[in-house]
Image (cartoon, rainbow, N blue to C red; front, side, top):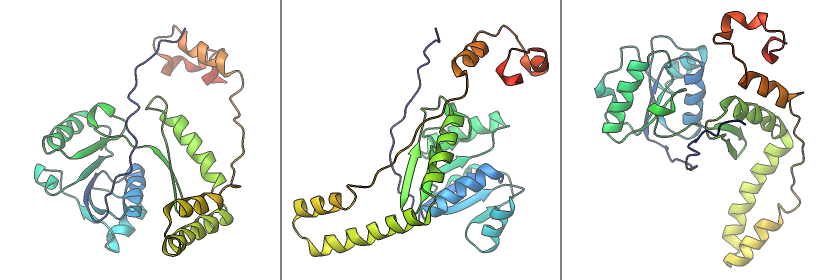
Length: 236
């Protein structure tokens, strides 16, 4: 019997950060992904990092985001609405940053550290006007990412991009020409009535046996012993 772990499912909302000041700590791939989301939502971004990915350097060069190489200080939180800390190797810094942000009632997410976050980052599908968030209540971010990748493929077709774009135009057109709210709602529902997603879930082979094997493993430190355990699913 697997012990049930109490998890925080969070309260899913869409946050308006348009034209708001947001701070990103770190200049790696995680930071690049987070900055991409913020830019997509229209945020103003200040990034603090010594090194940047090529994409982040490009955004700095063309003025899309602002860049500071000096270490973080509390003054960097002035007028900030939201903080994304992608630095995971310095727990002392992460804890202090969380304390300072919380003191100012600033939203903060610390990568891979829910205890130093007051909101969560979900796996996100962004295709056309579609924004589809996927969360496993922090039980398995890797599963959320896997689901995101598969769903992203489904909605990556040119036809869906055109379909969602036309729906946006239709909605604006109908809102102008149909004053009756009930009739407007019925019409908008009718034009997507036949839209349907079909699919199936393919689970890993022998997943129950493999999961039980990991949970019941008595090995204290499998990092060095992994190749010496022929029955471990991780060694196959």
